[in-house]
Amino acid sequence: MTKSKVFWAIVAPLAAILNSLLFVYIILKIRGVDPFAMFGLMISYGFDPRNLVSELNQTVAYYIAGVAAAIGFKMLLFNIGIDGQYRMGAFFGAVVGAAVSLPPVLHVLVIVITAMIAGGLWAAIAGYLKVRRGVSEVISNIMLNFIAAAILSYLITPSMLGTLPEGSQNAQTFPIPKSGQMPTIKAFDGEIYTFLFVAIAVGIAYWVMLNKTVFGFNLKATGLSFRAARASGVNAPRMIFVTTVLSGAIAGLVGMGTLLSDTHNYSMAFPSGYAFTGLALALLGRNHPVGIFFAAFLWSFLERSAPVLEFEGVPPEIVIVMQGTIVLSIVVAYEVVARINLRQQQRAVGSVSAETPAVKESK
Image 1 (tube, helix red, strand yellow):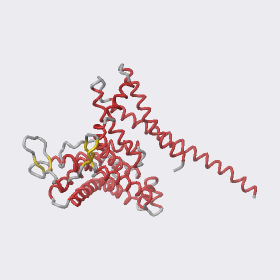
Image 2 (cartoon, helix red, strand yellow):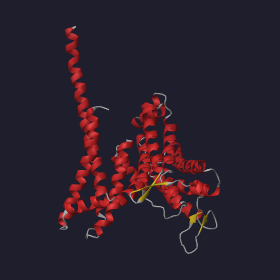
Image 3 (tube, helix red, strand yellow):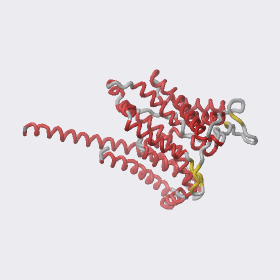
Image 4 (tube, helix red, strand yellow):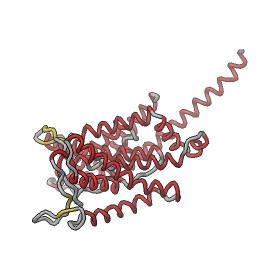
């Protein structure tokens, strides 16, 4: 990557964040609220040690969702089905984890692999429809999200694979035994999920796959030009299908931190919205594992800081406005950067073309 590309890769997201802050600043001013006091309150609350633990745990889920979305983006696919894939992964991982009895490490490994298989298989439906029937992955994945929620609502009933604890109205899977649970790290008066290290490994594996493997090269080549990749011998339809399944398999890991280190069972209370968040984080982080991590932490930080605003008479929804503005700003910023890079390339080509005749005449 050239110095120019590195420069713009850093400047573009920073400009988007600053633009969002400016927009929120104007809104708060109109409401008669001191923007700097509000920003300072959010920072002090968000960086409180106890809140940092919650933010870091939430960052793990957001980061994996961002990586899953980024894999699809590299193929110019919008994996908006992350919500359904992650729910399928968490549910079947919990069911299998509660049903088997294995040594500790092996037990966790079986749960994680089951979650990846479930997420990948659910994504494979959209991949098949895309390759064989030409159905937009956006439409199929949106429908699959609703279908997944309906199927799991049925399967989690006490008459099927779930249970209803006494005194509760929230059906859930049977609890995973101790051997299938992951420990936590006690820090800052809280407990950090050790699945954080798995998330880091996922990010490293993602980078290695893209930059050091033939599959990664073919993936990027197919994303840049479907026809050119096909003409060069790459099985483009197969790449689309495999990439969709891989993205779904990673999405299946989104809920593992919560499942293995906190609840130890799956219920419909597991949060939703990871699809849009993952796409936004991949976009903000420019599909780079490090960039996605900082974007995921920023998202977690903003969400964790939102409740404190209500105590000061400021609607916490202002954080949603900030997040939305960041996404819109980053889209505009990247389009501007793309045009600047294109002009620089055209100038470079033009200068080389102008020098070529002079070189020939000197010879």
